[in-house]
Image (cartoon, rainbow, N blue to C red; front, top):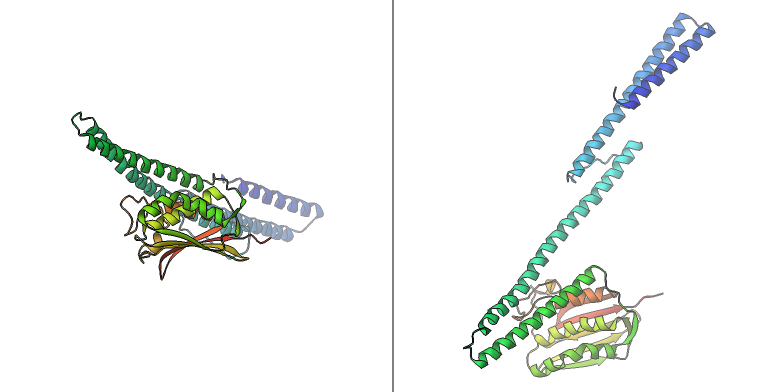
Length: 333
């Protein structure tokens, strides 16, 4: 009786029955008719109250269902194939439950990813910082020979440079993840883009006796952000140079067609190992043949930069070694 719907329902039934009986009395109906009408009104009232009670019971079940969802129980299923407003409400609630479950799973994955990323970053920063702290303590020794002092200073500078590069790369990744980078859309020739990407690696390649050559349609034009894209391609060429033996070659080939502009970077190394190939673009992943000072973020950064510009990056093995393929898809208006 605390339910207002039931109270109003009983009151309405009583008023309707009273009005009917009063009307029949005024019209001079017989006792049998009055008794029949009274019984019919009472039976209709009982049916109405049962219907209201059934509806309230279903609503209470839905309330319990919502409370269980609020407590994190997303494995519930209340789909209803019957007709009616409550059935539609059940189905809509089930759809909402599915969405909440998917969001909860994504949130759990994001938390795990964040925890793993923080652990990886801490590990990457801890090693050079610990090394620099030890060498800084050794430099305080006044009896330390000059040649050892210079060696320690060079090692500290190298560690500082590596730490600076790591922090800058992490900041760039964070900006890309947050969609805080506004890429310029400019017409850039493939030749200019490749020159900008190769220039930082010229000395490194010469010291290792690795030749970097360009073939194909380098005069083609593509729409991209030259600075960011050149950095992405530099990381790809750098990886190839590092895994190419002395006397080898890194080839940058260009192909242009109405659908896309394709850039292939191929080395003459040993190629990717089958175990590493599915993971080489993952952050902080270091393959079996990775250098000792490798961090495992350069390829992931390249993929993020290119994907944000309607470009596709893939890796595969070819007869001559490893190959990166970049496709800049053209927008068809």
